[in-house]
Structure formats: C-alpha cells, structure tokens
Image (cartoon, rainbow, N blue to C red):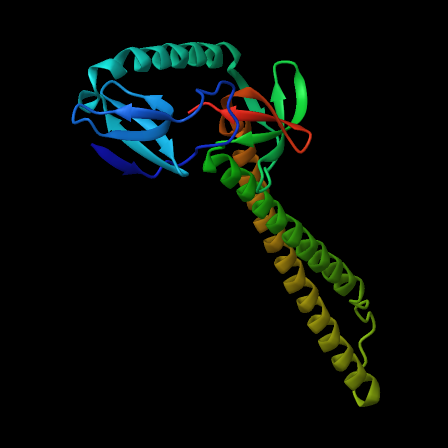
Length: 240
C-alpha cells in the first residue's frame, strides 16, 4: 500500500546517503521504485519524483527484508553518528530567510546556515527588536518633553515685588501676575507629561530586561554540523 506524505523540514543537506532508487517488491508481485529515506517499526518512507511515500513493511515481499535490514543498519549508524556530533548551541541573532546566523558552539562563535530552526527563536529575536524600537521611540519622546518642560520652567518670569495701587502700574501688576501664573501652570503640566513619558519608558525597559533574562533558555538548542557548505558557510541541522 502506498500512502502519499507531506513531509516538512526535509533538507538537502545530509551526512550519509542511501544510494539510488530501489524497485520495492510487494507480495502482490507489483513493484514501486523509490529511494529509501527512513524507516519506522512497521513502515518505510521512500522518495519518488520529489514526493514522499510510506510503504507498509507487511506488504513487502519476503526477499526485500534483508535489503531493508541493511538499510536500517545504515540508518542506525547514521543516527549514532548524529548523536555523537550533536551539541548544545546558542543562536546569537535573527536568522535570515536562508538560515544565515551566528551561533555559539563549544569551540566558539561561528557564522553558519542553520536548518530546521524552531519558529520560537525567530519570534524571540523579533520581539526583542520590536520592543527595542518602541523603547527608542519612547526615549526620544520623553527627552523631547523634558527639554520642552525645562524651557517652559526657565520662561517663567520673576514675581513682581512691588504692589502699586491704582492706575497703569496696578493694571500692569495684575497682568504680570496672571502671565506668571499661566507660564508656571504650563511648565508644571509639561513636567507632569515628561514624568509620565519617562514612567512609560521605564516600564518598556523593564519588559525588555525581563525578556532578555530568558535569552539563554530561549535561544539554546541542540544541533549538529552536516559536513556540507552552502555559499561558503558551514551547514548545521537542528536536531528534531
């Protein structure tokens, strides 16, 4: 029985290949030509014309079983090799669409093409970038308000010290006092706005600090070098 599969996360970089397509024989006498990809307890995944199919082992002819056993031994060796080179790494920046990024390995920091990367890591760096942009905008806004508030405070004139009764001087004193009160109120309101903007900025900074506190956990994964290069960069594969 042949069951079409849609396999996600299949990449063109592997350490061991299993050879040319094989004509798989069934108990019914029919054959199906496809390249061995992987096996499970009761099935075999093969590739044909760019598509993936599952063959039930119970449907295969008896003389196919020794061939399959040999492939499974190769698969075990490959798995053992992968396990021997898998290491804990940290992804240090946001990968581009082709997996290009910097990683921290046990031997140092290198640039690689990383395949099979969990979406959570890209989302983490995207959230950091977005939050930092909000902080930059809020910082500029708070600084602008504080500058305006200081200028407004400096623009408050001195209170008249002499009180005149009657005539021009009395009217001037009243006008001068009202103007001082208006400017003082304006400076006070601007200072309140600046305090509020700085309060919002501190909340954003605290949120970013909290996000970054989980940096190591969020960006640490298990991966291994595939032994291949892609545009002169070594390729690494995330362990499923």
